[in-house]
Length: 128
Image 1 (cartoon, one colour):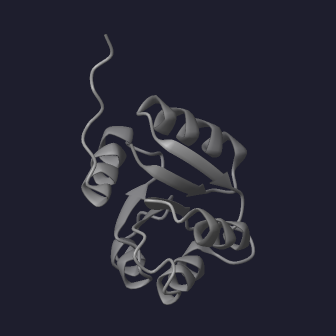
Image 2: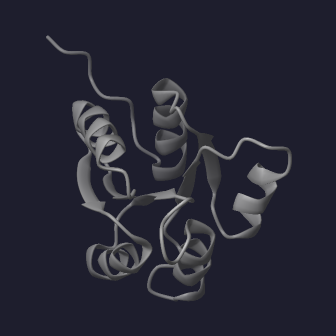
């Protein structure tokens, strides 16, 4: 499955997201802030980044723009994860360079479908 970098500052969210992604057989890497996330994206070259928008310090909008401005990471798809569900927030995410947008609380079937669409992956085989 996909190598996914999760940039999320809330520990409980990191745990939940990581467990759910690992249950789908994804290779998950976690970072707590945008600066660490940008460094990890350059080092790991993940298949996809899940970017919390409400990060302390550098926010997710700025981090997404930084990743898209760097030739080494520009091609990595980004899904914005945010509690912002106001009109125009999805468009703002796309404008910042995100490929898609998922609101919190996360609808995991919807997120998994977006991950598959952006990584070209196949759904996992059913458990025996």
